[in-house]
Image 1 (cartoon, chains in turn green, purple):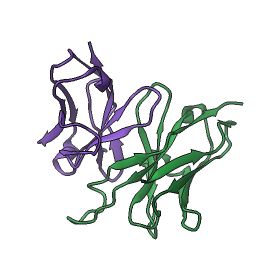
Image 2 (cartoon, chains in turn cyan, blue):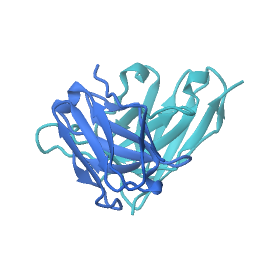
Image 3 (cartoon, one colour):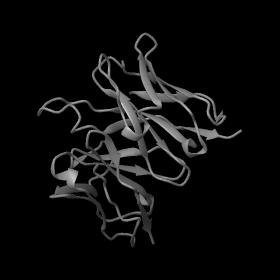
Image 4 (cartoon, one colour):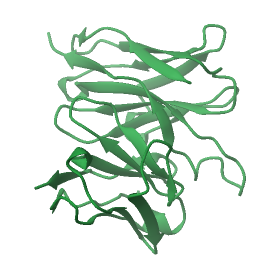
Length: 127
Length: 105
C-alpha cells in the first residue's frame, strides 16, 4: 500500500524559499501516476499547487506558477516542492498526494483524482 | 477560469439522507471527485469519476453528475459522517470547491 510522508521546516521567514519533500513508499513514482502538492490555510479550504509525473512537465496553479517548482527524484522515490518569496498568506498545512493519470479518452487530466495523501505538514511564515 | 461552488454547510438528522451539491460549468466536460476531511486529518477520497465509490466507503455514499451539478448523497447518515466534503475537477488546473461542512444533528 502506498504511503506518502511530507518533511520540511515548520517555520519559514518572509521572503524566504520553502522546500518540502514527499517520501513515497510502497509504490514507485515512475509507475504512471501524477504526484502533487495541495495546501490548506488554517480554517480554510483546499488549494491545489501543482502536479508532476515521471518524464513529464509539471503543471502548476496559474496564480502560483511564477513561484513554484515541483521536481522528482526517482532514485530516492520522492518528489519535492519549492515555493519562493514566502509571505504570511502562504501559511498552511501542505499535503503531498498521488493522483490518477489515465490517458484513455484523449486527456490525461480529466479523470485526475487524489487517492492517497500524506499526513500534512504545517508551515508557518513568520519572522 | 472555472470554479466549483458548494454550499458552506448542510445539516442532516441521523438516519436521514444528506445531499451536498457542487456546481460549475466545467462539470459538463470533465469528471467530479469528492473528498471527506475530518478535523485534524488529511482528506480522503470518497468518490471519483463522478460516481465510483472509493474502497473503504460503504454503499450509503453515492454520487452523480447531471449537467453542471455534481451531487454527493449520503443515505442513512451516521454521526461518523460529520466532516467537511470537497468536490474536485480539472480545468487546465486541478480545482477544488470551497467545501461543505456536514453537520449531523
